Length: 212
Length: 77
Image (tube, rainbow over the protein chains, first blue to last red):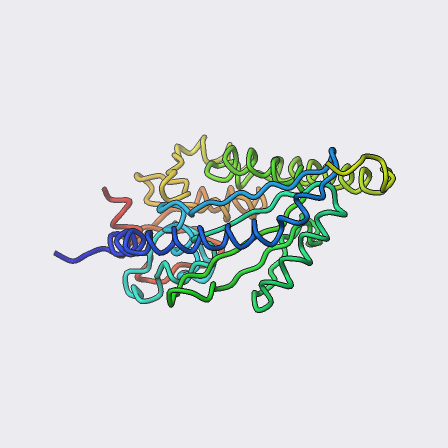
């Protein structure tokens, strides 16, 4: 029986899963190691949280389809005459780590520290609705186990990152992702949170709290 | 609103395909097309008759023939 592109991709995903787990474990460990010194110097009001995730199978399938169709996602189908255009290995984020940092001054420090370690990774900033970067994202390969898997890490302002966790699950996988009204509201929230984080960073004196 | 026009014309939202579909009329509108088309023009497309044997897909980017065939197969289920 002819195997569908969907079946083949699901097989590919689960074949890769043990390697994805190893890549994620390695990436998270390296990031925790390189940010440890900053973590231990945080003042009482400052925060640094490292979160990691493996992209879920169906989410990965959706992204592979969109990429294979060169971003033309209308109709959400695979082109049966171009099965070679679809592979899990085309995805940049099967394994992902997000570093949430507060406030902005610490975020800059974390970003520079990690950039100095992951020197060959490609910078792909996360833009806001006006196309200005509001978070840092890097994509690359870890140099171990001959892994072909691309992974990504992000350095994100904490309030924005926590908001995205709620917003993503509530909106991304429903018809609301197409709603202009929701896009407008989301842009307002992102602006307000960015201004709050920048305000805290600029208004709090450097010696406002002792190191913890 | 374009979605109101679709509802009045008995289109149903197909979540798996992100399409508004009317099986009787054999026509389907993508979410992107619904969002990006002016109301007057959109209403005209909804009123258009499908004169062919196959389906008519209203997309911002026209699908290839193989994608059309795949969509027709999936919508026939």
